[in-house]
Image (cartoon, rainbow, N blue to C red):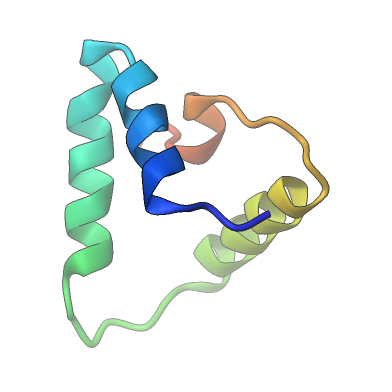
Length: 68
């Protein structure tokens, strides 16, 4: 399932205000153009989440953005 910009905006609008800082931090991380390699654990977690989303499994905010 492709995530359109419109749908992403609706998801963000529905997030509780206390979750927005974590989302903003993650977006900034994604936008950074650093040359650090992605570690194996992070890549495996990304693939797991991607596969679950492709199967239509709903994921909670905390599933996607675990507290670090």
